[in-house]
Length: 418
Image (cartoon, rainbow, N blue to C red):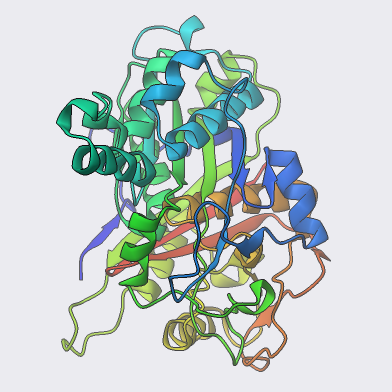
């Protein structure tokens, strides 16, 4: 098992805890931070039968789509060179920067950077160009195919559009990627980049990507959108993919103060990533160690955590493993647990950064959003799952968990603004 954490100061690197000053959210149940947040508190689900393509020939047919007309939302010149995923990322980045009151072009060169996560890349763009290649010939393939499908394309397009020329990159660790990207951005802030745009956005709902996700064996084949994704339910049988995610503006607190920022959402207080051992090793999975190390870095006792945003895989064995970790660390029913992603589906790399945004809004408004559709909750004696309706609570800290397909585990601790 490998562990990545920063409990001790690194020579030459500050231990500053960056603050979140802006949010940009794209989700199947709401475009824009406040639209998403209002829909989530109402319990509005964005899970539907797929409309992007005819799903009748596939065993799974439910997803969380984000459908919108990019014309008018983005410059015309960007449309031929971008996949649906990148258009979502550009809109989220624009919202996050506006929310933070930051225009990178007015800041010094190399003072801002971009760190994003994506799991699928521009699958829809790639599928269309492959169809052109095999049906008409190579001369019909767009020159933009050279980069529009690629995982780092969100980082590149955001960087170019906003003139963000500082430290930048991309991480690929599936669902955990949304946390890992924020943690990597935090390192760059500590190394001297005052402002970073970071998080995860995915959007790969096309036949080609759907086949790849089906191969994981994790997709629900239920036909009822309200019974398809049921983490912690006795009838849990798989997950529903979605598209979207969240981008965050994180800053060095001193730099944010110099910029005149008068509102922050919270502070990134602790983080750890681990990797599960290989099958048959008899060693335990890495989620528990990730949580313990993230709490240690945040210098928090488990009793000081006010809410947990669960990974909520929706598969019985993975749900069981997550609950065992929560009970071992916090005790039975000792902390409220929620999984608002039951309204959006699992957004791949975008899922955990959307959970970060949701947790920050929870800390701001002192309310825990609900987990929906759970009719046969199977773990009443073990976890206090917030179901059906939001719960008011005096929140000041939140823990966000994410497990990526392939063995990635990440945990991030947030403190609310004081």
